[in-house]
Image 1 (cartoon, rainbow, N blue to C red):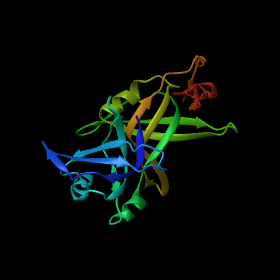
Image 2 (cartoon, helix red, strand yellow):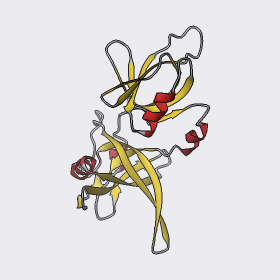
Image 3 (tube, rainbow, N blue to C red):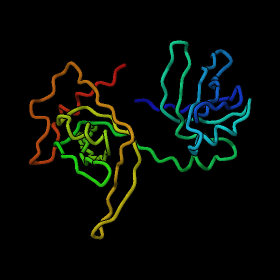
Amino acid sequence: MNVFTLGLRVTGTANESDGIIDVIAESLPASDRRIPTKVQLKQKKDHYVGKLLQNLQADETCLAIGPTKPTPDGVLIMQPMLIVTKENFDDLLAINMFMATGGLGPKADEVELEDTTVTNRSLAWQNDEKETSWFKLSAFGELSKQLSELAPGTPTIAVGKVSSSTKDEKTFLNYTVDRILYLPKSTRSAPKKAADPEKGKVAAAALGSIDFSL
């Protein structure tokens, strides 16, 4: 799971194939000594961002944000979630994305909806002061199945959108998952009891077992 933010210069006009818009660009180097990276932007023609791609012109600069994957020949392929130009700069102000990391809390069952399933499950993160923050993740469909089956304490990175709702005169934050990554634990062993369902807590050792090294 990765999301890149890239400043780009468009090097050619948009092409369409099988309903996909394809634009070639290169990264803007920070100095003359740096070699620009070739970036291929691809999005569905009827997608909001796909329509923006169709309007890009050669030599135009833009900011692209989205998940990427590298190719063997040194090209980054991006499916942009957002394209920002001088004409739609205000769109940058409407970015809604959270990235939460930590250990999964007690197991939660999938709930059947009319046309999909949903799992609501807590994710815990502990800072250096031993203060624990909890995020109640909501995942739908295939992500719902994954989230419900994993063991408590599983190191996790979740990316999605945050919103709020009200019930019984109380306001709640909602974290809807778009992407989720489950990380292997480090060589340090996690505790046997990573979560305590009675207290709704995840052991600190489980949270500390996340290995972010590349």
